[in-house]
Length: 464
Image (spheres, rainbow, N blue to C red):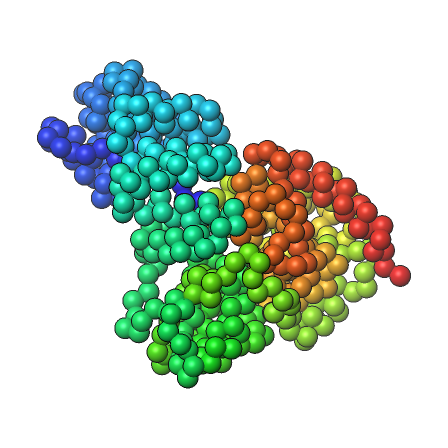
């Protein structure tokens, strides 16, 4: 889910020095803005626009406590400042202080009942807390006040999708091109296909967007589009090219950045559920639909040798650049009890953070193959030799599911929309089992359940 925006102040008729700081901030020249704010605050320590602007900049830079302190200074002078109250709520939300954040949003709305951003921000927190009906009311209020508030439409889409309301969810999901993915819009002369025109005899470009896991999940639609009579060209990210060459239904596979073939229509991969009117009951879920390279599997088999114990692949974190990584990833140290089980563990993620690497070296119970995982076909071949994959919500989980391998996916309290709510299975991946947090941040509880299950799994799968 998109993080709430933090509204910078308006320069208005402020003195020249304040206008300069605010304009530097708004233009993204943050280092210069910091210097300008500090210079002006030294002269005007209680100036509301300076406190709001500098506090907001610090929040954007991740300096939450410093930013919060400045906003609190402003609210001591102007206790009903709606932007300061809303941004303060955002800081408190990021610090995990949900009750205080809600109170701050409530005060912002009381101070300015037509403040669309405050309704949106409160809705986003309510959505995180799984208070979905309240969140939906706030999104609707924000949209009524600001109909083009794309992020409100987008988060509303995610809310519908996670609840299984795919009809409204996939329709609203198209707002991503005006919201979080507006910088990724592809400009083609050829029209966008969303299911209305017949495809018999037409050439269509299906193109990847967003993350690698999304491409692995939604490339399954290429055979369905082909079955409608289209000649399908599938454009994918370079690390996935060799893996997706095993997908049936794509007449031509193109690596992103290479010249495109001629086509008549195009469709982003994540618009295909809308185009093909996917419901939860009608998800195309036949697996495997991707396959490991037999030669690479054999190479890994020779490298690993005979298994003395069940083999389990692990992925506990994804890219730190992902906007919601703090929710979906966990530190490796939480896996200590899991790693004590009589199992042969293999790291399936290519990148391991320095702190996690030190933890793994100390525990000494897991094999890391990062330097040998050049592309996803390498990872797929390694996965093929695992008896089980245990992963948080990363591309590794999608890869295991697409290969038809047994996979346990460890999920946060408020999961990504694709995992739906309160179920231990996935209609997207029949071989997946979902282990969920029972309350926000409860990774220890999830790991305890994984330990219990893995102990029983290991006993059943001892090699002959």
